[in-house]
Image 1 (cartoon, rainbow, N blue to C red):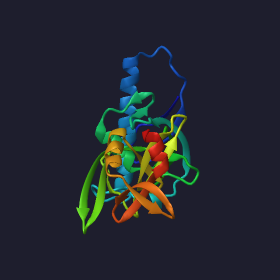
Image 2: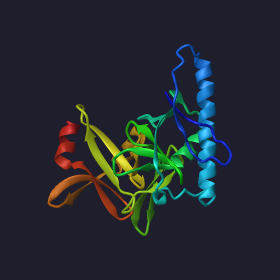
Image 3: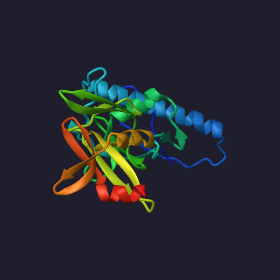
Image 4: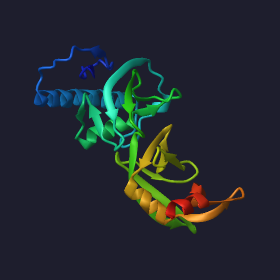
Length: 233
């Protein structure tokens, strides 16, 4: 089992230790240990971001940091957006929010927690965020779709933050994704996806009729109109 050491004053390193698993440990003890370790890791991240000059309420400049890779920790973001540390759900929303602010997905396709001095790998089952709410408004005569993620990010879909749609799996499941920052995306929840579909329209894109949705002056193809017609039968 891998874990990150608790924060020690003046020590910014997340030391990855290989611990022998104690199979006789009770579930209660595991939950307490995971909670304490997660809080310690959170303290480290908070202090490191503060030392780096991150503005209060803003996001740390993780894209500018180039720390050494220090191994993987036993942290996972499940497909439904639930965060786990050492096999235990992280139930405290402020902790999850803090961890989410130092997420970075690199060119190798892996996702990391990044501080100015260290980078540790975590597991992500699908997307690191989930878009759980959407608001449709109009600005200058154009529709604007604004999304809120499970970690508190608010994003307007448009040129800088595009939507993309993927047909996934044997059952041809439609999965919409919203760009949030860097290489990080949010999976649009099923409930919000139905709201998106209600706003869809048929438009001609490069000579083919497509079922699309508009936001911020951009048009985002969902699927070909004839494919939608076949699915509707």
